[in-house]
Image (cartoon, rainbow, N blue to C red; front, top):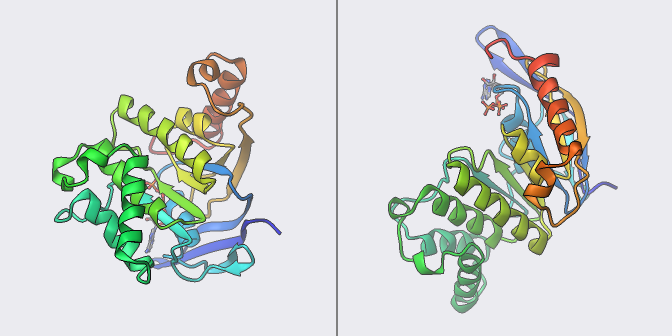
Length: 261
Ligand SMILES: Nc1ncnc2c1ncn2[C@@H]1O[C@H](COP(=O)(O)OP(=O)(O)OP(=O)(O)O)[C@@H](O)[C@H]1O
């Protein structure tokens, strides 16, 4: 059995003009510990698909199964991180993480919960900023808190919806490297939406490329063969990288060009 299976998933939303099919027959099997990136034009249904893995949304038909259990609601085994951080602005970095740990592990002792929070703040290099509130943190630091908060719950699947989309290029590269380190140490399965082909090629084991909506499907899945740990300069200088990049660009901007682009 696959670790995570998206099986013939279709999503139809009711609209003023009648039912709108957003996703049409999505099949994907993900192995435990895999790093999957999802790419596709705006509005094709990437968030809708990952929201069905998180359980915030449900398929109109088909199933999403995690280790034999059909997903029908959110749970701490699947944590999401969003582009806009979603931190509580009146709480410190420490308390944002503590609140999440406390709600998922109410029976842990206070000492255990504090230790989990400290460990995860340390993991993202924010021990010194534990007492700062989101308004006192940079975008990169806020996203580090959001990632630490998600991982402090010890999820099996980490779902990232364009997590680095709002960050500058240098911070983005730093966080990509941190994410790869965290991913390999935590051995968590990652599903990540991105609009950045270079980011996807650097991070992913496989790149899932979606066709345009309405009724979007998975067009192709690219295997990314670069050895790990990954070396950005070496990868970007390789012919394989150039070929994969061109292939993905051709998919997005020729074969499935968006009318608005
Ligand atoms: N609750 C809803 N009711 C009706 N239509 C919806 C609803 N939620 C999303 N949609 C539509 O479904 C389509 C897919 O939306 P979704 O947010 O999944 O796309 P996306 O690929 O993640 O887009 P982006 O890259 O811009 O974030 C869009 O046309 C959107 O308008």
